Length: 311
Image (cartoon, rainbow, N blue to C red; front, side, top):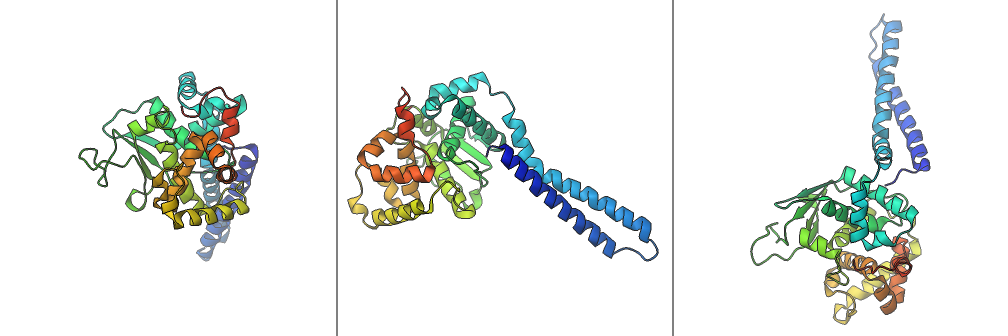
């Protein structure tokens, strides 16, 4: 998500290739329709318009990269930094260089994904908690995009299968959209706030839903380069064994995780980032698998911090 000098160079190179191919194709197609007897002037015009199309293709290919570079160079509001320090223990445990990287990732996310309140007010705290939920799971990856996501809807409360927030069947705290809701995530505002308040030992609905999105992105575009194949193979075998006999589920894992392999991954992602010390103590092998998947070690991170990860 961040534009490093190497990513910028690669983008420039690929954009030049795209521009050249577009210019050649437009010029060639135009020349194929060249009227007899108009060769010199018509050919010059074809070259001119081919060049224009190529230039347009270059800037189009560069658009996202240039936008992110611009966002990364914006000053991070001091009041935003105060919110992160007060609310997000993960951020507070980082060193200065990693805090700067976290802030840039949050800025880019908020510049590209709308956070919209549905019958509820949205302030900077809510926006930053949504952004933090997106950044935390992918912080160990060097180049990652939530390409599926365009908007996060924040509801005033839990909701039901019809997305209604009234009635006795309100049980859903978060939802990652598929099919007709593709590109949309829905989060309950109280649940989002609770996930960063220490109200639940192992639960964070924001991280949970972005874990689902991370899994969907990996299925579509492949795993990040940092994730070793052996770790993935070990994880798949572990999940298959666990879900084969849910009656003997591990008591320290929320039973909702045994619904299916997707919920298992999302629940354990919450656990890994919310209570890493507990997970590491109760199930060190599982902790090591998740550390290999996320390329992060939150237990060590929080071990160097005076703050509790339950904030």
